[in-house]
Image (cartoon, rainbow, N blue to C red):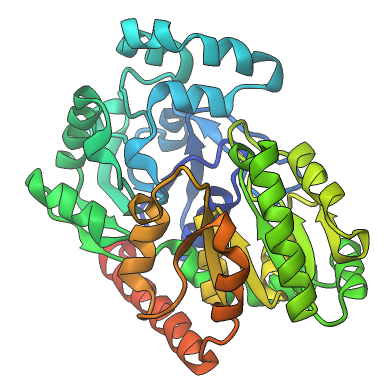
Length: 401
């Protein structure tokens, strides 16, 4: 009997490093399937190794009357509302108008969501079986999803999430905080690492090939003693925060003889901004910094994998560093609570005690010094254990035809 056709659904309809990566992981974990990548918007290949993606109405054409499995690939899907999704999916010329439309969205959320993202739900990346009219869903799965601040979101969004989860056949979450929040609502979810824990195991050869690309060779040549792979989102872009980052990174470079390789983990609105990176680079000693321009998923993985330490606001940057048993730190703005983020929840669930978790930017240099002293054997044990755990849980829940 041939495997059931499978729709892999998620937020890989825009450029976000983590979402594009987990789409590829889930696809590789389902060999031999007739499969389709779907999101809220269609997305053609961009040369970034992300999947070609269709919008929801195309799923019926793919199914052709057959029953299909639908798998939510993972990520912080449970708390992304329709307005946020619309902004992140918008072409650059439409972003400001959509941001300005927040009041309109709040007045008529469901109708607004239907018009702008094609689903009359406040949580459009959380599909129920009823959200796909004309499609027979054999198995609806949520794979390693997150929703750390679900309690802080609108009650209507929470109700939409709960209704969709109640229609699911399999639910797994990637950290204990979301697991506990769902348990309070009567939803039992398995605990599984993020799919990106499989990066080195599944795509090691691909990533090694990309390490030979010109963009990577230039970084290796510039920093023969090694470098820190550094990333941060656009909301770190005020002058005060950039000044603080510059002071901290200069210390890191000087004390540990490291270069600073700045890279983007997302080019969609509200993600990373190349102009902000260039403003930081202008504050640093020119010989100590390079802005890595490539947005290719495997180039980014290769940059992280060859680094001596990862420092960034991207959770998936950390998880790839974990997969390669590298020292890692997540950074937070001074006005954000370090212990209340999805990063902190993931660290508390899967990291060994004593490893650096989430730190404010003013503590970055001291934290790098600490994390570079981490026991490498322990880091390798964590990487292996998480990959084994993910494979076992995924195959148990979704590896059947």
